[in-house]
Length: 79
Image (cartoon, rainbow, N blue to C red; front, side, top):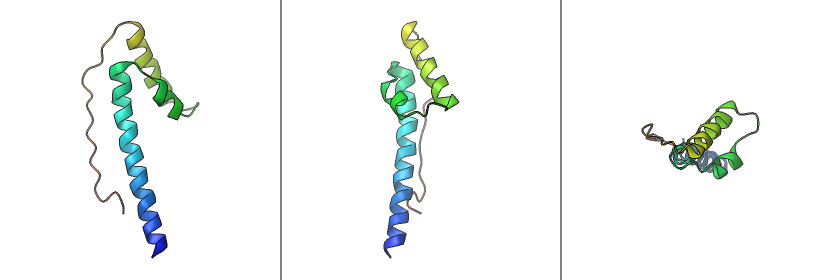
């Protein structure tokens, strides 16, 4: 019924959000643009802060990030 569809929608949304964050992580490191990452990060998230610092360091030092490509496969994201 309605509850099952709502739960499926929440799960699909969570899967899409996770895929977006992983894509954003790669973008941030490749470009040094931390604005979106920082706006979504919790102030106490160590991983988020470290990743932002790495991207900023690369940008400020004309560094380049390569590799680390991620592939996201969602099996039954709505379940």
